[in-house]
Image (cartoon, rainbow, N blue to C red; front, top):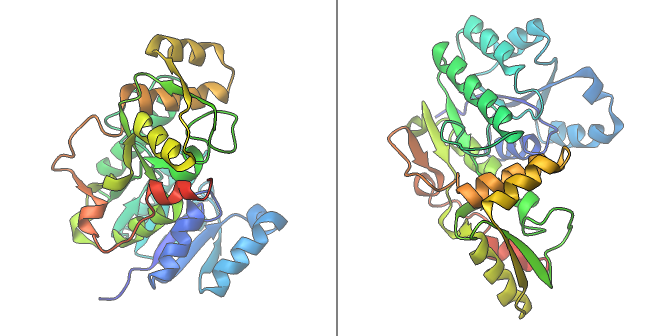
Length: 305
């Protein structure tokens, strides 16, 4: 089977760079839509050079430049958006995909919770609701899609065990949100890229949500802390915050601290990543691709001992 030609938007971003590397590693003709300001950004030049050395092709353009979108889309089969702050600009992309009419799969920027099944509070709620609107616009346009629910970025939450302000896992005391028993899913960013690209040409993921609910990495905060305590041979002092206390902190903390606390509320108090069964509209990545050896939480934490 001929590998699809993939256009990645947001290639130099936090998740985008891993999707690009996975696309190239899996042998896809890989194209990157990159704005002029990024090409001339000295901090991004080295990364873009590494992509082109591996075979990526760069198109100059942006989500705001409709003509550049249409031109790029005519060269590819699949579009993967990994943009961060430009969620709303994807409506322009959807319009262009519909106009071109030859795109066989669209992956809008997701890579977190299932946005149709969330109970997040503001300021997180607004971003999640907007991503759900992108889903509806995609479906209403009749565009074939795959939504990737990657859950929790390991690089954000494991180095500090979900403790704001820390750059390493705590060794004395730790804050536990809620009762500590709701399970979240931690996925290394490289593995998110790998599973995303595996799904590109897979008919089983067409018009489905691809959940990265990896069994070895689906842990409660209490279980995560227990892993760490075993590694360092020490019991941490635990401070449990009730939902009322977490909500009060969200209300009283200025941005961006309140945004992070809202994430902790969704993950650890509500349990939004695992408080539902995967339905007929979804598939689970590790079951579809059992040969992919993903990094486990246990392996990830070893580097901090």
